[in-house]
Image (tube, rainbow, N blue to C red):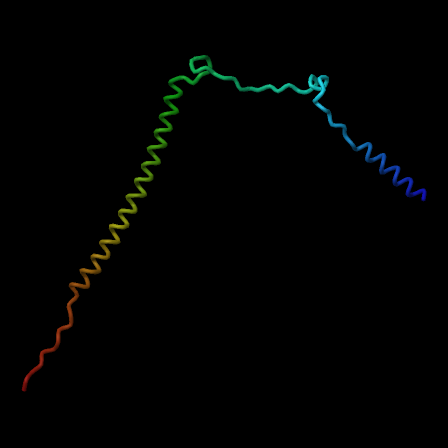
Length: 114
């Protein structure tokens, strides 16, 4: 009986000690204590200080154009390889057909009349 009381008392003390009070930000006193949000983004005027210069934009555009040209060249190369494979396949088929046509047929043996 005494052990039950000790266990229950210790459990209540443990539960009350571990509970946290969550701050309520609805009251005006707590709103002042809340951390202020600071944003590091600022709108930059296109003609103001910090705006991207024409030289930088030209470099960016040059890199983008080069990447686009490289991509187009890769696509063209793949298409050319496909065409070459199809052409080789057609030539192989033609060669087989001409080989069959030029293949000498077996001639019947001449018969001799007695």
